[in-house]
Each structure stands twice: as C-alpha cells, then as structure tokens.
Image (cartoon, rainbow, N blue to C red; front, side, top):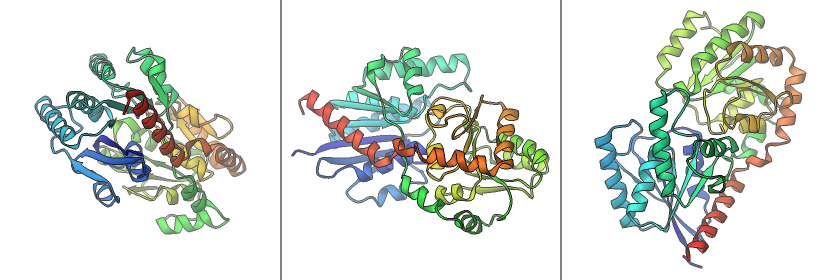
Length: 387
C-alpha cells in the first residue's frame, strides 16, 4: 500500500493543547500508511520533543511567527511554498490561525492536492475590535475556499464558522482534541494519590485546593482567576490556589496576588509538563477563559476524577455538564465562578461525585481514537482525490 505523505503546519510548538495534540498525531500516525512531516515556526518549548520523534521529518520556518507583520508574513508564505514544493506531500494539515491562513495559501500555490485545516478556536475573538474580527473573518473565508476539509475541535467552533459564513455545515467534521486518559486516571488513583501529588509539588497536604492550568495571556483571563481566589478566601479562609503556566501577564498576575494579600496561599508553578500530577493534587479545577476551542484540561480533569468550574465559552459546555460534572458561568463572571468553587470546596462529597461522573464520560476524548479518526479522514480524502 502506498504511504500518504502528510505535512502538518503549526505556527509554533509552544506548550498548549493544539501543539501537543499535533505533536502526538505526527508521532502516532500509522507508519505503514503515512509518512508524517511537521513544519513550525522556531523557538517553541516543544521543538526538542519534535526532533526526538522517530521517523518524523521536522523543519522550522524562520519567518513563521504569531504576531501579524505583513513583510515577515510574506516571507513566511514564500518560504512555506518552497518547502512544500520540495517535500511534495499529498496532504497538508494546518493548525492555528497564522499557520492556517499562510499554510493553506502556500499549499495551494505549491499544488498540494489535499488541504485540511483544524480549528482549535477561531483567530477572531471577543477580545478584538469589530474591525479586527472582520479582518480575520474575511481571511478565514478566503482560506476556506482553498480547503478540502475543515475540522473543528468542538461543535461550537463549527457552528461559529457556519454563522460567520466561513463555510457551510457539511464542510466541517468535528474531532475532539484527545487526551491520554490512562495517564490521568493512574496518577489520581488510590487513597494517597492526592497527598503524593501535593508532596511532589511542594504544596500543603490538608487544605482545600483549587487550581488552573493555562497560559498567562488575555484569552485565559488569569487576573480573573486571582480575583476569584480573593473572593473564595473570604468564604474558605484556609483555601489555597495554584496556577500552572507562564506568559505575557506574569508580572500583572504577581502584582494582583500581592495586592490581594494572597502571597501565602497562591502558588505560581510556571510552565509544567506534568498536568496529571497537578490535577491529582487538586480538589477543583478552574478555568476562567474568555474564549476557547475545547480546552483539553477539562477532559484531563474529568479523567483524573476532578470537578470543573469553568466559563461557558465555545466548546467548554460540551465537556462540562453543569450540576453533574462541575459548574459553568458566563465569561467574566468572577462572582459566579467563585460561588461555585466555594460550594465544591465546602462540600468534598459533592466534589467527589462530580469527579466520578466526569470520569464516566471521558471516553469520547481518547487521544488514540482521535488519531485513528484523522487517519480515516486522510484515507477518505485521498480516495476521493484519486491518490
């Protein structure tokens, strides 16, 4: 059987769900049927991991970067086109907004027969001006015309694409971002699992503990999380909080922690690559995002048997069943989120029941099933294209 050469393009291999899932996909594609390639902008925290993947051709495109810079973006477009002509994949699969637009155009100019794009949350967001959103929507509409198949990580993202007239309903296939379920179940299993995890992280053992795992950038609204912590402490004085991640808002987060007098109870962990240990340590996972695709940390918490309190944005309500596996509140509703966290920290039995019910429905996020679905999609598209 002829192997299909599949090139995945992503803006940068930073520490995030889209990047980790892309890296897992190229590592676990069946080598009997597929030859994986990966192209990314330089400087990602996961670059070295990509270089270590067996039988993976990995290249960095020096001009590919997240900030919009027309001159540099044109250089990236030309560079990607040259690389794709040289590598000659049958399929290009793009991820993230910048690589999604430039990569699809480069693939079309290079004559790649099949172009796939995964929407891990749209490039236009509620945090942008109306003009900014309009520009990104127009670019997505243009890029969609070049795309053989659109994939969305949540039904909400697919519906948003339809409502913005980016593409019709039948242009999307929903494939949830997968997680390594066993990795999180095993770490959280057993009566002493939480104590062991807290000891490894240097956290106090016998305190109520809420936590968030997120980049410190406006999308994730980490300052809302610090404000939430201040409100929860008023009701649960011995509560502690952790925040795993780093980014542009680090200094602002540190200043807000100090201003609210939370220094002794708030633990900033920085970048971590052991989310299974962090989740095992928690009583409640919190996510204060203003927009999302479908954040992997929610099904990861479900696999670990931890309840979730999150903002009801984009795909999050597809994972969190309010009143059964956690609670939801509107984006920016710090008071509502804090009230739900207080309720779960004050009622450990309810938190355990919610966690157990989350674990029972996590199978839909199995990461190997995600890879197999992508393989079937590639094979189906190749058959239709006569490859």
